[in-house]
Structure formats: structure tokens, C-alpha cells
Image (cartoon, rainbow, N blue to C red):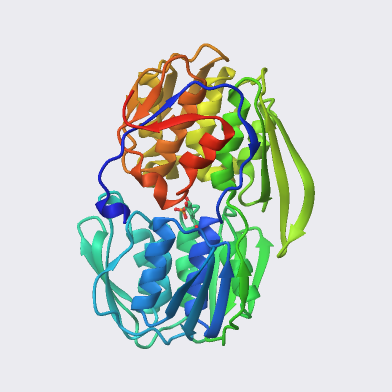
Amino acid sequence: MSSHATPVPMTSTACGPLSGVAEVPGDKSISHRSLILGAMCIGETTISGLLEGDDVLDTAKAMQAFGAEVTNMGGGNWSVRGVGVGGFAEPDGVIDCGNSGTGVRLIMGSMATSPISATFTGDASLNGRPMARVTDPLALFGTQAVGRKGGRLPMTIVGAADPVPVRYTVPVPSAQVKSAVLLAGLNAPGKTVVIEAEATRDHTERMLAGFGAEITVEDTDEGRVITLTGQPELQAQHVDVPRDPSSAAFPVCAALIVPGSDVLVPGIGLNPTRAGLFTTLREMGADLTYENERTEGGEPVADLRARFSPDLKGIEVPPARAASMIDEYPVLSVVASFALGQTMMRGVKELRVKESDRIDAMAKGLRANGIEVDEGPDWWAVTGRGHGNVPGGATCASQLDHRIAMSFMILGMAATSPVSVDDGAPITTSFPIFEPLMKRLGANVTQGEA
Ligand code: S3P
């Protein structure tokens, strides 16, 4: 697992046009939720297209530890025999969620209203991330949490034996927090209400409805009001996981900056709570089109076609769009380096508490590669140098963060000198086929330093 992987330095060197079809893996958010909701049903849930990255595999193991039967049927097909809402068994050992904030926070929510205890840990990145944002609302159900200073893992959660439903306004834009409260609400009697001022990814709401829970969403002056009726019998079913827009971002952005490129990334979910990057890229002048637009499993889906875009310009990214592209700012900052003018990104404080402090990690690495970056607590700005003018040449610290490692590999594909990262091992958490997929398109990505 990522927690114990030895560092794998990687280097990316300028390449000729990228071309071909990039079939990216399944959506990470939906993959975690399929396993967790499958474990909370009675009967067999089957999943196709599951992302088999370390983060999701850690969640699969955790569901087994709580008593579900999770089987890898091969070819991305999985089966989960669940134990029902409130049916989790107490795990024998510590639950290791590796690098995954989504995994640990959603699993804490899913066991928080059952009369069991569990101890959670992760890698150095996860053990440094704030958990109080989840344990504070869980305490309202009657759940107890004992962790390290600052609400950090390792942490033991003592589930509420007699949970009460809650009404909670999420104080930060976080789908993980919202989802943890909703999953906890499943085993509380009565109605649990979660209010979010800013819409965040809505996979939990959509999937809960799909699994047969009674859930309503209303847009009000307070924000999105989500009401869940507790103690439903969730219906086991088949989940077809769409391909991940956050992974699609890498081949798409690479194609925009490598001269002559033309890449097709098929079957990408364009749920508006996830597609902010693509809108932003088009505003910057990207030659990015949606082909074969359709609806699959209730979600808008299209094939993305990205071509080299000679006239990219810096823009101000609307802060209201931040939640819909929160994981894509690192790779956006790479594209911004090849644009002319400044790209200003405001309202992005959450970037500082991801797998790494992503503003810090990208700012340091971009500066080392010759790009000017300014930053404040909740904003940063990249001054682009235009195509052919990005020096490169530096080794960057990936800080145990898959998206930082992949972003610098994309930078190297169009920079003048090679770009390296000290450790590309975290890439396997979300995009295990990144290296062969990019190579097939024509990229020069290799293991080792330049
Ligand atoms: C996720 C929510 C986001 C995102 C993460 C996946 C999810 O985190 O960054 O990669 O699946 O709910 P936050 O809830 O912390 O914004």
C-alpha cells in the first residue's frame, strides 16, 4: 500500500505530439462509495469499472474488516455482500486507509452510529490531515473520537449505541464531511439534515437515492438542504462506475500544451459538481470539445477531445467554481504556466489541507522550474510564460501527493528541460496506469531522475 511504498523518482522529458485514445480508470469518489454502500446493503452489490488504485483497495479491505464479503471478480468487476445498515461488526485490527482522506472520513461516518469501535490510521500524509471536521458533526449523533493532538490520526471512533438524528450546516465546502454525516445518518432514527452553503460533489446523494434511501435535496437561501430518512433498507444492486474526470484532467491538459497533440478521452462524467476544470480550460482558449454527449446512469457523459492550443491566456478563475474543480488546481497551474498572462485562483483555502498543501507544493515546484507564482492563505496566481518558454529542469517534491507528482510529469512534457519528481509512487493511489497510458500517447515518462 502507499503507506509503505519505497520512493520512485520519475522524470518527464519534452515529447512530440500526443495522440490516440486515453481510457482513464474509474471514478475514485464513486468507487469508494460503491464499496461502502454495497457493504451497507443486505445481499450482493456488483460493481464494474471500479478504480483499482490503492485508496479504493484500502476501502475494500476496510469493508471486509467490518464484516462485508468483498470479492475481486477480475477485469474491474467486484462483488460486495453487505451486512445491512447498522450491521457492521467490530474490526479485529486497525483500519489502515493509506493515503485516502475520502476513505477514512466516509468509513468513519458509516460506522459512527453502530455500537462498535474502530481505530484508524494512514500514511504520513493522511496522519497529518484534520479529522475534527468529521468528528465534530459525528459527536452530535453521540459518537466519540479519541485521536492525536489537533484531531489527527491514529484515532479511535466509538460508535453511538443510541444515535440521534442531527441537523448540521457544513462549515467548509467538503463533500467528504457532508458524506460522513449522511452515512452516519443512515443508522440514526428520524431525519438527518445536512446543509451546505456551496454545492460540492453530489455522488453520495445520487447514490443513496439509487440504493433506495429516502433523500431529498432542496435549494434554499441557506444553501442546499439535504434531508435523509434514517434506517432504510438499502437495496443491493449493480453499479457501473464512470471514468474519472479528475484523472481525465491529466491527458487533457497534456494535449493542450504539447504542440501538435490530438487526444480523445472517452466516457468522462461531466456532472456539474465535477466539471469545473473543463469550463475553465475553455475560457483560457483551450481547444477542448465534448463529443458524443449522452446520459449514462443518470449522469451527463461525453468523450473529451483535446488538441494543442497555441493561444492559451491567463484568466481569473471564479471562486464559486472552486468546489467543482478542487482536485484539478495543480494541473491547471501547469497549463497556466504555458498561457500568456496571469491565472488568478481565489477561494481555494481547502487546497492547503489535501494530500499535501497543494498551493505550497505546486508553488515551490513551479518556481524551481522557472515560473512565477504568488500566493496568499486562500489564493495563488501563476504568471504564464507562453508555449516554448517554460524552462523546466528541476526536481520537485511530490509530498506524498499523487496529483502533485502527475502535474509535474505533465509540466515536463512541454518544458524546455526535463522535470523530475522525487517520488511518483503515490500515483498508484488514484491512477495506477498513468505511466503506461501517457507513454502510449507518446509521452517520455520514465522512472528515475534526469
Ligand atoms: C472527495 C471530496 C473532495 C476531494 C477528494 C474526493 C470525495 O475532498 O478533494 O479527492 O470523494 O468526497 P473534500 O471533501 O475534502 O473537499
